[in-house]
Length: 419
Image (cartoon, rainbow, N blue to C red):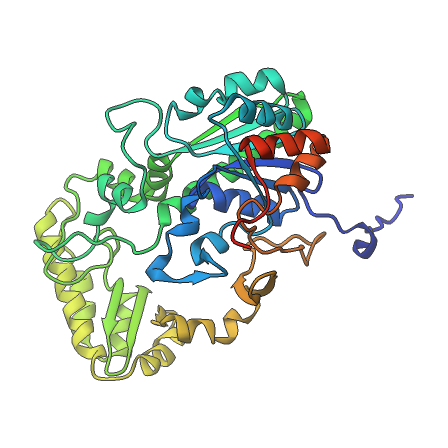
């Protein structure tokens, strides 16, 4: 007789998925820090190793001039659940410290430009000799070869280089870029995903490996539908005279000005929209779609549909059109600013409150991944510069005299000099 399966008591067995894993974080800016922060939210111990002279430059590069607790908000929100160790990796003594830490580490992640890690003597080929179980993740802009390999891997530049910015807007006008660091975010997910897969493989083989991610690879994956469609098309889509969000989407895809506010429409059957708005011309246009091989004609057809819908929606408030169209299966939503979005009932559970030793409580974005075995992960504020140096080295087996010697020599910066 089959026994009933007994579920474990999560109250007594709750455990973060990466609890017990040690991660050395040698990253700056966004793609690397967001990856390691995510691993920290999953329970890993994250040691952020920063350089003397100020550390991660994003501490001092605020968005719109906004800072929090003496650091830029972009640093504060990308480096939670980490400890800060300030270590001079350009010195022999500093590298020796890192090598000792690598002996105990499960993961190391860096986002130096190509060949910098080799120049510092901390590339994978060197570190795997110290710890064959090490999973080594790297993020670069364009990869290790090719004519762009030494160019800066910055988000707007990648969007522009890879054709993305020409997929929207009007013909003859400025290319249209995302204001978000979308390439960094995608790359952060990719390297985190790769490192987690390598940890699974290590549990079987006992061996670590190197995981390489490029920002150009990340943005190409984000554009895989558009690139595939471009390669398969007799004639690629063209920009038209109306403000298109994407020339690869069928109309009425786009954002529309209303009497009050704006409305986004993602997908809508033109027959349904024709009846809902009492615009018979939309149904007629649906039946008269030009052949895809005539790119100019398709652009004009798309513009005419956009213009018809735009002229109608401007006669009423966005909330009215949303109430009318959403129940009919039209994929639409009222366009919000941050004030409206963050006060919306849908958003209440997507924010968390943290405590900072300098400024007290502040609000941050909640982790995007939830685990049933760890429904309330422990979250901690971003570290102050060098605030954990002594504790980190002690935890990795350095005795008091060694730590004092490293601090006195300038190899390690301990404590927060701004305190």
